[in-house]
Image 1: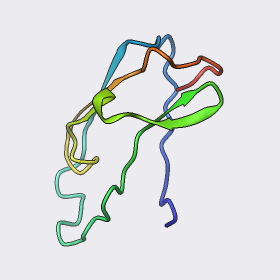
Image 2: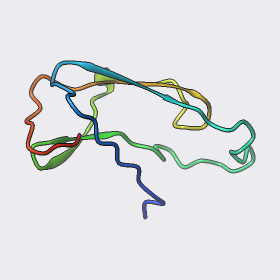
Image 3: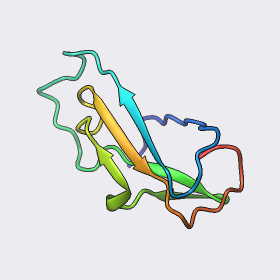
Length: 88
């Protein structure tokens, strides 16, 4: 499958072992309720050294229903993360 898009966020001073909470405000009615979303159509990753790694289930809480509604996404940056660049 092809990715339809990507959003990259650079977070300063996000230290391994700490939590980040992001509020995503989604315009009500902007999603097509009749359009079936593919399973796992959204994934969350962080930069570990020079490698993109999928957030483990126990380190991510998505209150947005995969960005289909307004909510908070909580991410815990694992303690073992190697800081290799200025973005995660």
